Length: 366
Image (cartoon, rainbow, N blue to C red; front, top):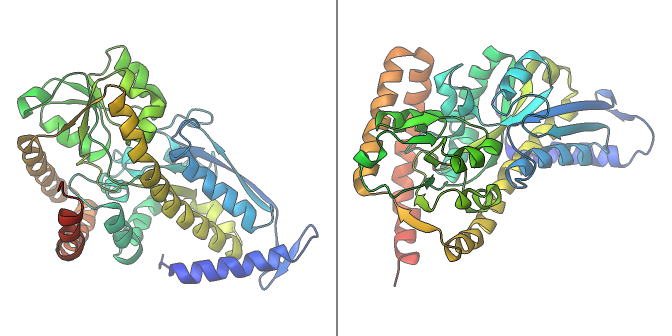
């Protein structure tokens, strides 16, 4: 699917909203005919208590309703209400629900290249990830993969660079990682496994109890604001950074392709505009809230720790070894990886000149 520009999406969506808002009757006449009244359901991977990450799903639903005058409504459901949090794509693919809000890397068992739709270790920051998806061919690559699962995806949230997880004891070397039971999904989990970790995948609502009861020795989720809400600081003392496996993870809305094809053009444009708004809004909200949450955690006794250079270097080597191996075994992964790798080199080169040089000076301790 050829990606339309955001300006065109916004303008077309605004024009449709104006046409709908001007009518008070049960139906609306547009260039394509009468717009129907539709009721969809959206499965998500998130507990409702996490207002920021579940809020991405809520933003899509609210904005679609607002921009259609209530004629197209989508009801979001928390993980587990319709299907378990890690089975959203299955529900979308099978038509159990019309759409879902989730993370593509939960489904690397279906196709390992889906990891790139969310984040991969030592990959792209949120700004770089958006550049790749919207203007670097990334979204087209992901949508081509999703077509095999009767689905189409749109970016609909980003957490920004995540934290590196909660540990019950200090981790100073690669040797300290060996044998740890850690909740960590995606390719990050595979890299940790290569470093000796027993990587596990759990939905957000199950992490605290597993960590508190000793089923896990460590766990990562998102960052200070959400981690505080889940109470992870009550189950583990040491909080590590950075989350090298998720430097800018995208969350997405997945739509059953059959249901998508039946939407009027106006509704498709509105849906994409709502997803774009959710993508931008979630990142801004996390950036606004994480700093204060981190201060509260540290004041409450959380021990903030950086990953050692030894661990970071070992993880980076293991990450790119994994990519090369997967590329040698899977043609789709190779195609996406090589395109992504070329974009990464280009955008890293640019950001070293502008953003990194600025950050190194302005954010340094003085």
